[in-house]
Picture (cartoon, rainbow over the protein chains, first blue to last red):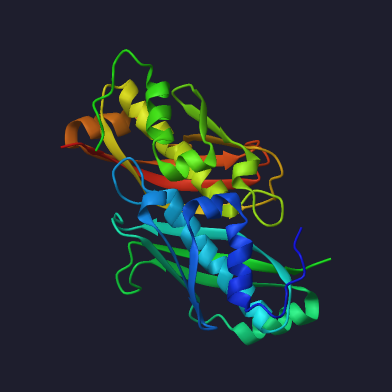
Length: 156
Length: 156
């Protein structure tokens, strides 16, 4: 299902193309905003994600945070030269305040999680997992927060 | 934001209209399938919810289960004559197997949760919460499962 990435296209743009080809993600209007290696940000317009109360639909908040974590792990693997299928294994979400603005989701590894260990385990076993935190809004006072474990599996 | 329901339209159809007016829910193609009082089912076509691997996007699974819980609590309140704003407060999700079929989500109150107590608390205080379980697929061997707490607040 997944074509070999074109190495002339930057990884973030490649991933945006993958995301935009997924109907539910396209419908949400998800746009990758930045990837620093340790942090990934994406946004989505409120209008495409609004509920009957005029604020952001809880499912869209969950999706945006889950995608941010998924994109962080996927890009971190690509940065290290690995192509992997990345899945979310589980997540805990807290909804703390209604969101009346465009959605901004930020994902980082959980404190204590070690990217080097994750990547070396993946390289050795073709399978590794890492816990990720994602928030909607400001990290210090988020409107929603997710903690989830993501699993990477070698392709083929 | 929410018009007074037309009492000549059955509650499930009223709620379907509310859901279909929410852009992210419409994009997912969510359809309410049944409401027995204790259980609510909804479905969504795989095509509108597919990821880059040809199976259901994790965010869509989360959204479908969250919506099933939300619809169950909303309809149970309406059945008792209450109009309320219902929010998801938190949830835990486990993703157990990839989904290659249309999504079918089923929500019930968690074992031990008491609808009568929930409704009487809501009637008295204008606010109540109840824990809900939702699954994708068969309850005995679900492809994904959610446990979440839903809060109902009186309008106005």
